[in-house]
Image 1: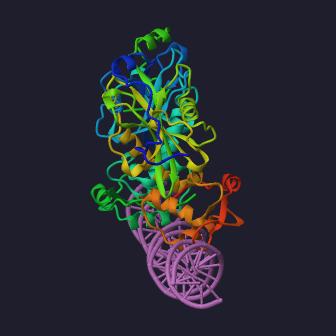
Image 2: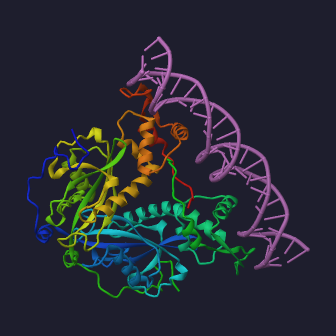
Image 3: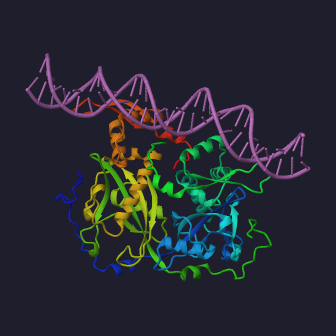
Length: 249
Length: 249
DNA sequence: ACACAATATGTATTTTATACACTAAGAAAA
DNA sequence: TTTTCTTAGTGTATAAAATACATATTGTGT
């Protein structure tokens, strides 16, 4: 019979002694290097892209790799992710979230290395690449073969995460210019989710959420009737965030 | 100007040499012990509970701790989680999912230890505790103070994860007896989500999903009109899983 | 002036969510 | 055996949200 009362006399007292030297305990554990990999998504020319570099391991010669680095000894995991992002792209004002830890013992040819994937979305036009070290470039997510390590899997899981996430949170706006047309917004959703959406219902949906600010400006240099430009009202969104509740499976 | 063509001659070639000795590279990295912590939720007497033990570190004397252990050198992270669950509860047929990595440098008094939380839901009645080593017990999630390490945060994040997860996946059935009444199911949702639900609409919702098998049996030994018993049709669910799509924030 | 291409818009229909109150069945007590 | 108590079980009206669908509009380019 079990009990739900932690102080019940029925519970056996532990018979071991308490460990007094926590440092010795931790020192006795096997240790593994920890890296952070950044999965940085961008949107451009109607394609979802991810920032990649060429792996500098001979073992993976020619293969593409995520932006990753070892976590420093006194550094928070998230801090490491922001650092890498800053070092590689010069940007520090972007959204960043942990996606998953990957720890297969054989994922690194040099021995076990556990990595924690962080995902970030940024607007390619706002983040012009100035350094091309290691062939840093935006790579179409549809065309990801020959990746180093388990980075294909990391990108795939991050992409799944993204698909779900943009339906629940207004992340998509991080991938667009500050001023955007509804068509651009719809394209983004269509490309990321891999679906076609009805234009009228899409507009209805977004206008009814009432988070778009009509800028009374229009697209320029388009070879057709220019669309209206909007920006996202983050302040209003933050105030009105709804708590989510809907059993649905 | 950036480019989206990875093979463009505009891209600077990397100027460093390729690293040939991956083992030396990995050996040069700082290394950190990795643990897995299992957040094992159970439901009993209309309360959501989590399996805890008494910490065996003197530093945390008297505080409650999750079931955790170091990840072995050649072990998958998930494998470690299943091993711990098996060792501690004797069970190996439960659902288990990674929730998050926790890696604050100061979360362990003995030095940096990174932990990866795995979440599991099980039916307390099916998993009678036979060992009370370290005062293993089911602890009400509402009453979690004095936890060792950052385990309060780990449980909180796992609980948030669970709340979201049970609305999208039929996890709740793992917490119930095989045969359950609709009232038991509704109680579970009400307790985990912390809301009150309308009985008629709740029934309507679940019957319309059509994943409940009517067993034509009734509750026994209840001091009131007995309710019908159902079981969940996992096979049908697996076949009819819907792909989720609904922009909603 | 004309063709072209994409913008902008409304309505009818279906589906889903919500709010709400009474009868039925069995157990327990009188 | 009657009464009381407690929970099970059910239906309908209303509101909100999702879906399907076609035409006029605006600016560009020839």
